Image (cartoon, rainbow, N blue to C red; front, side, top):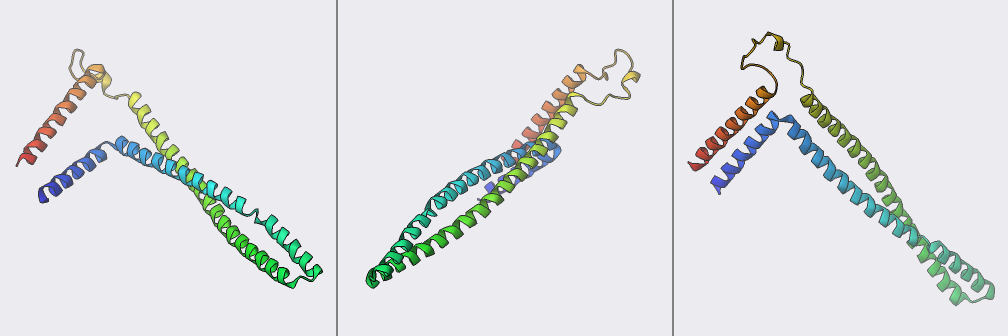
Length: 189
């Protein structure tokens, strides 16, 4: 298991170094995590809204309490102590249940408000990250002008432009190939 741990640690280190060398990847990873958080908060909000609706439906117990209160009064007026006592117990039970449901609904409402606030924060942070990503992409499309561009001799291979970009890509590919070969040699030990 030690070899796999070492390989795993080595690959993690290489990945972290690569991400540090390419900050746009870090922004994309952050944006991906924020998108997942936004979806998770959205699911939580849906669940909390569903629970709130369920509790609101249960609070319709008020009609039952009102009915049993009327029965308590009617049985008291009729002198039926046995039914009056049972009606009072039922009314008290419904009131207690209503209070519990009300407290639960109040807690769900507070959590829902917190989730909505969190969703707004995550959306704002994600928008910031997307703005940074767009700014980086824009800066790559409109590179800074080279102050030494006019000083390169005509016909020189050091000219900037499409040929320079092609050369840069070829060197990056060669460097990557060399790094992969080095990693393979290291892992082959």
